[in-house]
Image (cartoon, rainbow, N blue to C red; front, side, top):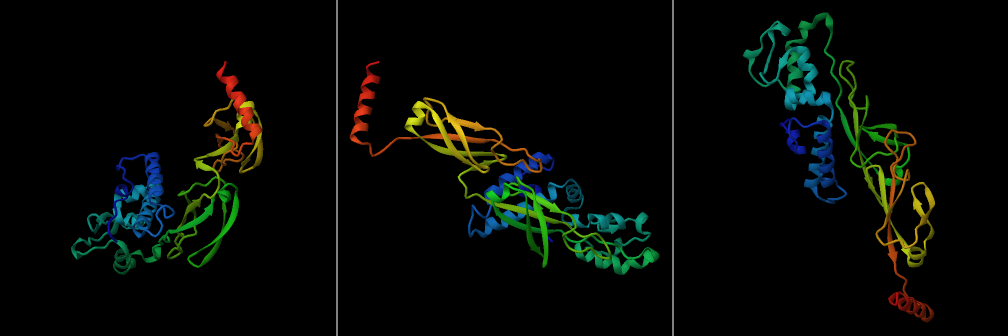
Amino acid sequence: MDYIDYYKTLDVNKSATEAEIKKAYRKAARKYHPDLNPNDKEAEKKFKEINEANEVLSNSENRKKYDKYGKDWKHADEFEKSGYDPNQQQYSKQQSGQDFSGFGGDFSGSDFSDFFNSMYGSAQGSRGQSKYRGQDFNAELQMDLASAYTTHKQSLTVNGKNIRITIPAGVENGQIIKIPGHGGNGVNSGPNGDLYITFLISNNSDFKREGNNLHSTIDLDLYTAVLGGEISINTFDGKVKIKVAAETQTGTKVKLKGKGFPIYKKDNQFGDLYVTYNLKIPTRLSEKEKELFTELSKIRNHE
């Protein structure tokens, strides 16, 4: 397994904070998302590398292991139990009671497990065989924005097994959640690995989502804009009526509090909906309408 610099993948410094890593991940995930780069194999590869880097660096425990053991970070628990240092390619005499430094070779990765069992397993005696944690699995789950608006259950197949999960309302595009114990089986009664699910959320609605807030543009007829009135607009929660102030200008933005997107894992809390008015000039005017507009123009110009 070649060494991959996860910090370089996300374009952050090794001292980056969790918030900086999260921000960098979201920026990179949007740039290389398959929906924005159809049939682009390089972008698809880059997207997978970004998710892999985020899986490690966004988890404080995994990040510590990676910083210490590099490409062998997944074997950190094995190394620490055995006293093996992959950077020095030797065991600690205090831990093993034996010095294997003279054997040479690379005992990292999968080769280490075989070497340890054959050369060092017999010394465990009554302590039994070493337990190893199962492999973590990664999966992608596609859904539309309307589905992400409500909490719901969904079934998916991972490594030949069907699992049913509850998806909380408010998940974001590119967000990764962990399902503990649904990864690969552990060895020698060791714990199972975890399942990491990346959500790919498409948006075919009339709304633009920014975090927990939604944005929409509504056509407003000239007469309502001038005289004011009441209009009905669509939200994810059904239609609502709003009042339009007289002499409303095109581009005017109004906020509907609590009519945005659900806040992830916070019951009954929502973002806001921002509505921008687009003034619609009437067309196909009748002769009478033209006369009236001409009269209005004369009145306006003589004020």
